[in-house]
Image (cartoon, rainbow, N blue to C red):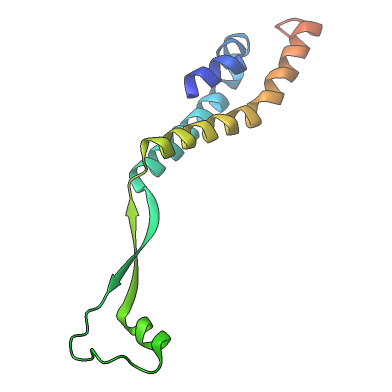
Length: 119
């Protein structure tokens, strides 16, 4: 997604014509790669319920809600993202790149048409 989005935006051409923005473009791309890698490694936070077995008190208690709270302990853990979730994440990051750079690329392109590439 990232390579296609860079090409669609025309960022390689923009950097070739205006090398002074190379660092900014590279930092933007690096930020997206770090976000994707971090999310891929970390996964998603899910709730795991563990039921405590209480063999001593098998008699049904009058206050059901409180007894269930005592028997269920919620824990959290991270699960790996599925391929579909990773695909959605990549698409979302590509959209963020378009939102961040799209207007700038169009603006510089208009200036290039009016004043030439060495303005």
